[in-house]
Image (tube, rainbow, N blue to C red; front, side, top):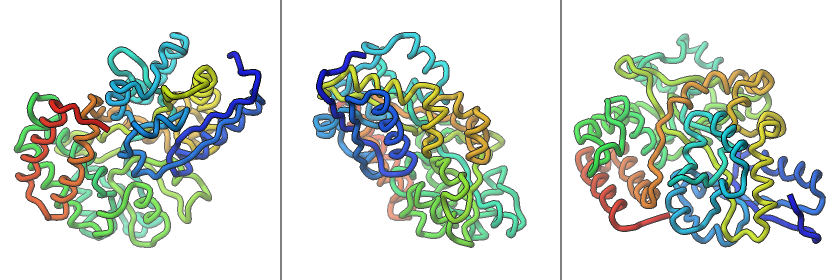
Length: 389
């Protein structure tokens, strides 16, 4: 890497949680020690903003961006981020692909280019308080019927803010034999979509109404600090809550229950590290992105600093699993099976408008049939009108 003869400062934008922010600060600190003429400062935004804040303005003000893969199509179409395959060796990218957790690497590949590196991997997994389940006298539910029975005891919590409600909807559609967005003109088969919404509404009705206001982080905090909520059937996993001393009580994590004898498939999340097209020191920004994605960093300071890496070897690493009470090994099969959302330019617009509708169905404010009508209309509009993030 060739450095500027003068000190260089890059600014990156991450998201506001230990998992999303601290590992990047730690990586920037170490990178700066290795390259004393480079300073990388990180800013942060909320989890909600990470999922739905427009990138168009952000890309003008930051050199490095931690992004959600559904934004890739829109970002690429509008020249907001750089194709990293133009700057990184093919052997490095091949290793990243080979070591992908599920479709994490592929999620940032669009129209033949690699737009970000999968530095973080996640999907909804299950979580529970071992002490409270033991007190309740039950094991983590194996089937959907088991889950409903446990929910009747008022010890189940799940995140049901708008975006998470939509992700649960995708999962339930798959469980009913309908993979979303595979048929032109509709999100899923109408009857399957209605059934998915009704199953979710029945589950949410057995949970504390506070679930409708909680995202995954807030759900895990509620599980960790209380003495009533014992189990979460699906929420984007956070290894932090499996670590000793992070929260008031340590959580255990695992896979998903079965529905009609088939294991549930949740929706891939995670985060990618991209370089803004507005960056004035592209070589240095790319070098840092490569540094963060490097196996030694992913398996080392990234995990040690509270991160949830995107590099597969880190998920299989003995020390990482010791630190996190087996979190990585116990949830890896769920991430490998996770559903990959669309990434066409209009998808994030669809997601932003569809999510509140699904949540409104779960609260009983809208009927399942009306929501399905609206989802198909939004899908059509997102495909033909050029709407974007």
